[in-house]
Length: 161
Length: 171
Image (spheres, chains in turn purple, cyan):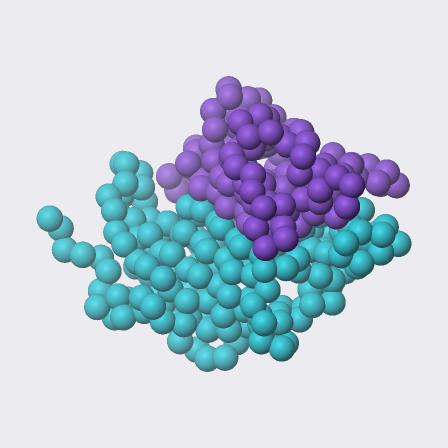
């Protein structure tokens, strides 16, 4: 992740190799506080994301991380890869498994919830003057389970141009 | 085989527009959105930095637009029967028989980045409704696929989003 004041790194088309891990990755530790913050920013106030008794009255055992927040992190991975002079062309994912926040709500079981967002280079090609890189990417939980697989597509600048 | 939970009235929505709404993409909501996901990339808050990039101005994080890809009235299980995205141009609603939902997936294709100051017109359509039997606790499900097309004020497509929403019985 970049910090305020530092120019984000630029990756170039030539630097990425098919089958290799992406040079960017993210680690997140979602908390109930963050889910509330996200609810406010996004407008998604569905109670399964912050109201434990409500969540438990549905098919869930705990509050869960918003799918669209996980999508947002995959989007962050792609904008980090695109850098200042690249473009994010596509981001997509499926929510195959639930992710629970680091749950400090009284009475809920505590689950270690650090999640990792990363990916690999699936394909590279040039098309209509753009240098395209397709990525497999995913969010995995602390047990290494890929709860949210997805794909992304970025256009990157080439070196020396 | 149990009787279908998708009525003819619901099925008639497949391929139809649900409605349209206008979204003003403003700087401060972009900054707050990036902050909420823990993304400190200056392209989302530092206009001077943004001028040095290919974009020339602040842009919205890629995920931000997916929030508008599914719009629900009565969102939240406490509110009873769920009504799906009427938009601001009519009161047509698709009423679902189940009040609980889970998000199944999001896909967004960007023709260009969404920029601060953009005014976009989003139009959502129901692409598909299918049903499936879930595990105990989930019960019967209706899987709703929605496509939302975002156009600028000149009518040029900026992005296309797809969302899969699972409406479930909870039995």
